[in-house]
Structures are given as C-alpha cells and as structure tokens.
Amino acid sequence: MILKPITSKKARWTVAGCAVALAAVMFAPVAGAHGEKSQQAFLRMRTIHWFDLKWSKEKLAVNEEMEVTGKLHTFSNWPETVRKPDTAFLNIGIPGPVFIRAESYIGDQLVPRSVSLELGKTYDFKVVLRARRPGDWHVHTMMNVEGGGPVIGPGKWVSIEGSMAQFKNEVTTLTGKVIDIEKFGADRAYFWHAIQYLIGLAWMWWWVRRPCFIPRFIKMQSGNEAGLVTEEDRKATIGFIVGTVVFTAFGYFKGNSDFPVTIPLQAGIIGVMTPTEMPGGVNVHLIRASYRVPGREVVMSYHVTNNTESPIQVAEMETGGIRFLNADVKQDDTGYPQNLLAESGLTVDDATPIAPGETKQIEIRAQDAAWETERLSDLIYDPDSRFGALLFFKNASGEIVVEVGGPMIPSFT
Image (tube, rainbow, N blue to C red; front, side, top):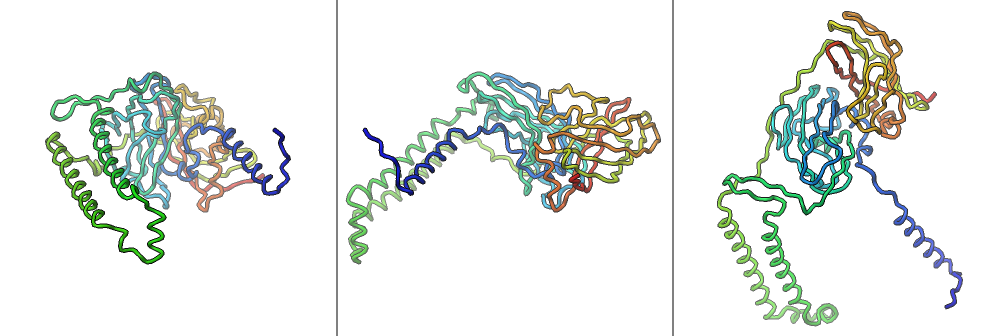
C-alpha cells in the first residue's frame, strides 16, 4: 500500500485536530484529590476553621471503621455573601460512597440531621466511617450550609484494602428484623424496573413495527394526516394506559402489604448545638496585616494582652486548613497532611514569653509556599480583602485559641 502525502489544507487541519485530541486523552493528568482549592480564599478563611483534627486510621480493610475527630470554629466575621449556618449538616467529603457514615456527633449529641450553629463558637465533632470500596481516597471534613453550599476542610489520604463484595451494612429494624442495607430490596427493585422497561419497549415497538418515519413524514407533508393514527392504535393506547395504571396500583398495594410498618424519612433541624467551653484569658488586637507577594509571606502586627496566670507564647496559626507552626514552641505529632503543614512557617519577632498581666506588641510572620499552592493568596484580589485565622497560644495549662482577622493589604516589593 502506498501512502500519499496530505496536501489538502482542510485535511491537514483535521489530522492536527485528531492528534491534539488523542494527546489530550492519553496525557491528561489524573485528579489527585478533591476540589477544595477551587473554593474561594475568603470562604475557607472566614467561615469554618477546623483544628485538632485526627484521622484514626490511614489504612483499613473493607467493613472496618475509622473516626474523624476534632473541633470546628464558626468565624465571627462570617462573609455577608454566604448564608449563616442556621441550617448546617456535618458531613464528610469523599469521592462517592467509598465509606458509609455510620455515626456523627457534635459534642455528645448524635446529629444524623441538620443542626444550627452560632457564629464565634467552637464545637467538638466526631464522624464514624465504615470502609466500603477498596482504593486510596481523600477524606475531608465538610459542613454543608443551606444557601452557602459545602464548606470543605482539610483532607487526608486513606487506603482501603479488600473486596467490595465483602461489604455488609447490617442493621436491626424497629420490628427486630436484621437486614443488610447494601443488598436489601435489590431484587425487588430490579424486578419492577424490568417490568417498566418492558412496558416502555412494547410501547415503542407498537409504533415502529411498521413503516414509521418516512411514510408518516410524506403524509404530513401532503396534508393527509387522517390515517396516521388508526382505530387499532387508539385501542392499543387505551390498553397501555389502563395497564400502566393497574400495574402501578398493584405495586403500591403490594408494597403496603409486604411492609405494613413504616415511618417517614426524618427531616428538619435538631436544634442549636451546645458549644465547647474553650479556655480564654488572652486578648488580641490586630494592628495591621499585609501579604508580601514575592516572599509568599503574611506579616501581622498585634497587641497581645495576657490575662492568664502563666506566661504565654505564640505556638501556631491556622487559616484555610493550613497550619503554620512556631518550631521553637510546638511540633506536630498527629500525622497532619504534609501539604497543609508548614512546620517552621511561623516566626515571632520577640520570642520571649508574654508574662501574666503584660501587654506586648508582636510581629508574626507566616511564610510558606502553601499560600500560593493552596490558592489562599487569591484573597488579595477580592473586593473585600479580609483574612481570618486562629492563633494558638501555649501556656502551662495547655493551649488557648483566639480568633483573629481583618483587612489584608498586598505588598509587591
């Protein structure tokens, strides 16, 4: 076979287009995680702050359980463009039903439904997950806010081993019967859907069993529409309608007969959750904050007053799920996701502890490439360029968490 060169301009463009499409398919990068980076910086910094997070396991088998625990803080200066969390649902962000959410708690309260959260408050939470589908999955904290959408928190890779065929989700019903929700009712669903598909196929066959499209089109064009629907067609249509109604009624009464005891799906709001009592005694006032674009660094000046009974030091700053640690005061031992952890990213100009009763002006610098890679630096291009964060102060009794925030001015030098 002799291959002739392509001389036509149109043919060359066609071949080039096919080559580009093939390259896009073959060399397209695989998505490595969720789209939390696509959420606006102000949304991640000024809505819900997640901290003290722990994923109880990084590797588990199908049917095993893991827990995601920690605290969430609803920011006081909640964005005006996002509806407040008066109706919110504690959830987990995962790529489909790779886990099932067995239990979820805010404080000691079981929360299978939506709740109300107050701004400026901190809540303990726990979500119990059961592994369902093998693979490596990114498991995020998440809060669904009515009118505000999902607010996604930090995520960590978790591996599930085994076979999905081994998965069971057994529960005991109110009548004492043990059923596997994973398979319960599947045969019944297949049967009824098959009957409905057969009715649909029979209806289609009735109209296409004879010359259908071209002859009918010709009759329509010629104005001879009288013979398109015959008396036989009308009788068949009535039969299909009556048969469908009878079939639907039979299914309804059959379902009521087989399952006489039912309750409706539960909806509504559980109520206002009880916040966690957090230690206080530290007052922080922001003087100014700026973001140095060339250095990927946020510089903040604060007046800090220590009203506790022991000296305090700045240990950490958290914003948008990224943790900036003061390496001289605090190290992480929780296995926090490395892409969200700046282990030496926080420095203080005056490292001496702030004594009880003392007020000191300090300058804090939070520097790391995560400002760019996690797209939090996009904040400086917003019409309302304000940041939100949590400052962690360490003293003899533990840690004190203080909410901070305010305008952020960009610096390009």
